[in-house]
Image (cartoon, rainbow, N blue to C red; front, side, top):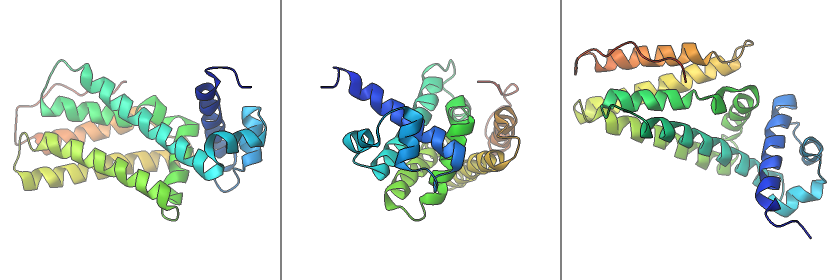
Length: 206
């Protein structure tokens, strides 16, 4: 009989093993046996907790999305400034949090992005994430500019965040999060330049 309280520990262990396997060989070669080997458990445990590989992949993507949501939320909760610039800055910082840019996390994101074109379950999760980023940005931009301009600003900044992340993740050197944050903050300043007073230099460190 499993020990009481073991299930969440085991589930997290398997999610971490999935990311490690994807980091090692890519999603296509990430088998149930390889994941189990990384986790140091039997392959049957994966079926027991997740119903198979697809369920484990969904749980892994949900974990990464939860980490992203938490990274943004923590930064927004600790703001001293309630301005749109500050909130959007926190969103930028959260999207380049260490939970999103480490090797295993970055490669897992890339794998899920590619697979979402063919797996409806992953596509739904990706769409939720895209809508959340756009909606949060648009809400803040609407506080300082007309709605049509706010929507365009939100689309532009969301595209830049995704583009910086994607180009960095595909780079042989890996994603330079500090540089990506700086470029995103610089673009934000350009978007807001006509609507309020200039802010101090953006913080480019998490």
